[in-house]
Amino acid sequence: MKMNKFKATALTLMTAGTLAVSAFPSLASTSGEKVSTVKINLNLENIPAMGDEVDDDLDGEVTSAEDAYSITDVEYYNSDDEWEYGDNPVIKAVVEINDEDDYYFPSGVKVKISNKNVSVSSVSISRSSSSKAKITIKLKQIDGDLDAPEEPEWSSSGVASWSESDYASSYSVKLYRGSSTVTTISTTSTYYDFSSYMTTAGYYTFKVKAVASDTSDNSSWSDESDELYVSSDTASYNKTHASTTLSTASPASTTSGWQSDSNGWYYLQNGSRLCSSWFQDTDGRWYYLGSDGYMLTGWIQDGDGHYYYMNPNSGGPQGSMMTGLVTIGSSTYYFNPNTGGPQGSMVTGYVTIDGTQYYFDPVSGAAR
Image (cartoon, rainbow, N blue to C red):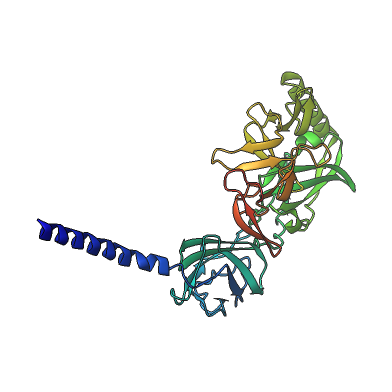
């Protein structure tokens, strides 16, 4: 019995020793020198531009000169073969420790772009293990002036039409009678019926420009259309027809634009109130109209769980979607300024903004 007890004790000690040895490597994996910041050099041979092919080989363009770690994999995280207007090029890179006995990545590892030849909108890092991390680099949104619409033409009934411009989010169209401006309208179509505006005899022309998601990229104005002559009889008919339409429909049936009442602001599009919908004005600002059609302000959440902050101040303009760093009360938040994000949505985690790294709480979104 004593021998058996001795054997049992020895076995217990051996088992404990085995467990201690097997646990030792995990301790060793976090020993050595801590790599708190990963430094990356970004030297792209082909900077993404509208119409260019997506480069499938970034070897030697995203690098690090540090001895502790190396870039082991790098590629664009974009599915298309060609860069289009509004794209946000995303580079995904994997960085790994060269010698796990000498170095390791801590849980709060950060990333810094040391040298670059391209504009970066944000960079983040996530640690897979103490020896491996993944880096996401978002480049500046691809821009470029849109091409002006072509072939501005009239139909005999007063419908203006033009060719489609690639990447246009809408079109701005100016109607003239002689040298005087009659009206300027905004539409997402490549045609517009101006007959209701042709209530005075004369020669009418129009010109159009393509409006981009970033209004600084709007096209130039198109060539002016040929003249369309509207006789006195046609002008009288147009005027009578417009009056009949107004008298038989609701008072706002031919109205477009912002309207307000005691409950707030709402937007009419061809006489219909926009509801549960985003709306972008000609200056590129976004607004959200609730289920009752009224413009929302303050915090809102979309169906995908993204949070946005709509300017609650009347001097802002009120109701417009806010982007970038925004202080709300005593806290600072970051709302995606890019169109690929989705634009205006609250960002969490580590983000580098103008060379400074911030951390935004994953639950509240507030900067720590």
